[in-house]
Amino acid sequence: MPYIVKDSLLSFILSVIGIFLLGSVPFMFMGMSFNTEGYLTGIEELFKSMMNPAEIVYYTKSGVYPLFPGIWDIVGYSLTILFSAFFIALFLALLFSIVIFLFPSQLKDKIRVFSFMFESIPDVLIAIGIQFFIIWFFKKTNILLFQIVSLFDQKTYFVPIFCLTVLPTLLILKVLLINMEEEFNKQYIDTAKGKGIGRLRILWRHVLPNTLLSVFHQSRNILWFMLSNLLMVEYLFNIYGVTTLVREMGSPAIFTISILLLFLPMFLFFTALRILTYKWVGEK
Amino acid sequence: MIKNVWRNPFFLAGFLFVFALISSSFYHHFVMNNEIYENQIIYDGITPVEKAPFEPSIEYWFGSDRMGADLFYQIISGAKYTLGIAFVASLLRIVLSFLGGILLLSAGRALSLIKGLSQSFYYIPSALLIFFIVGPVISVEQISFWEKAIFQVLLIVLIAVPNTAILMKEEISLIQQNEFITSAKLMGGNKFHILFKHIMPHLWPKLVLMYVQQVIAVLLLLAHLGILGVFFGGTIYREYGPEFEIPVSVSNEWSGLLGGYYYQLRLAPWLVFFPVLSFAAVIMAFNFMAEGIKRTGDQLPGRKKMKKIEEDSEGAVPVESFVFLSERKIG
Image 1 (cartoon, rainbow over the protein chains, first blue to last red):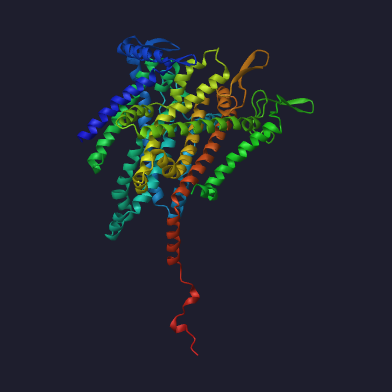
Image 2 (tube, one colour):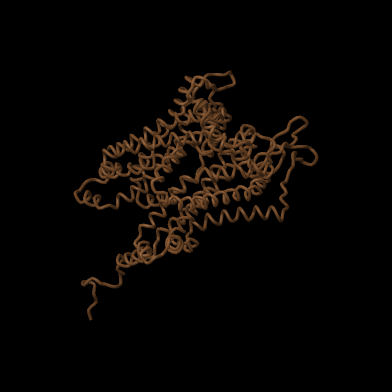
């Protein structure tokens, strides 16, 4: 346990420094030429402006606003979409994996063989596909299923969360299917079967918890992948979230603050998962 | 082992698709002189029937844009550039990460520092990071198109190097744990000898797999950058009607097509849909290749043999090999 706390603290500090360094990269380029000196003064400048967060402002079409407290709302909105999509994806993937488990084994094998194709669908395709479908449906029936484009003060939740859920569900499902297969070939499953425990009960009590661990291991990659998705969804559905703020302002201070605010809850989540797995299986 | 990849149906399917796409792109370039059929109005005799943009039909497979240019040929023509960028950028990524990985091998205590710093990449969407860095540079007018393009490709390369280098280092250390490395060291092989004679043969298949995976990542990144309007193919403004000028991609490079047509999403959805679909198809093809490589990697010769033996021992007993005693014809 102390090891985890120490290690997490170290990686927290280093990640924050890393984000700082990335945030001041624009100072490095004067036009096209590298400028190391400019980079060093840029870091200093960035640090100074971060010390006075009250002075940072952001613009929208309706005017100029101070970054705080407006940013809480913006970051909160993005994080709500991101994490609710992640948990819904996790839940759906678990559900599907159980359903697939109940299929006859030939079909199951086929799904597993082709599960690598799940990764091939680009997030842009899904977001645009959903938009087309809603527009097409609206043209045919004159029923607007969902508000597609969110206005500044009006927040849509359903469509962006739905868009963001599809691919992670497939990704987690793939991880689950592959690891479930591995888990089922282990000897303790034979013992359980020998004791006459039912297949579903083995799945629920023994296999699923162990395969969930592998999802936890992958959670950082999955959430990173979802961040890219979030960028696309916010752009395509005209949502004013973190990535839109960073994209439209383009100022190093806003970039660094926004990414740090995005980083903090994600990091806490990963650390919580780490401690949880440690308590659970004693794994560092 | 890596030669066996050509016998894998998954790899072959993906490879043939990409190969066919690139060769038709070059065919279009050299034999058909890179011409794209443009026609703004369809006539029936002399009466105009329809005005561009045309919807997808038998004549226009993927539809056309407002200039009446056939989207299908635009995509074919742009394929060589998009795939070319992806190939070159991922090759550079792998080469730099390989060198970085070797450097990291002797990094010692600095390794955990570098690992921690490069973790920060996991909290920033890569397209956003590139957009953030490229944005101010791209708006400067004095910089020529080629300089901008090279700058963008370099950024695309550099952004992935830290984490890939760490991955590479871990792969190399995994191979280094083998006993034959220890014996090679004991026999007096120096670092480079061990690296090239003993580690590289085991690393090659992994490098090929990583390369294909990087191509997929770069293609996805290009699609994102295209949607965000960071052009690759260069932009020119063409007159549309007497008053308007609309941005057009010069080289028909796919992310350029996407960025150029994105604003016509509501008017002519197919103009956005088909470029995205082509990205999806190519990414799918590369995923097939990656899967093929993974599978041949798993199929070590020893394991294959064992499977055969198992099959033999489990083989069903042929019916004619035994007869029930009661049915036996005696005499």
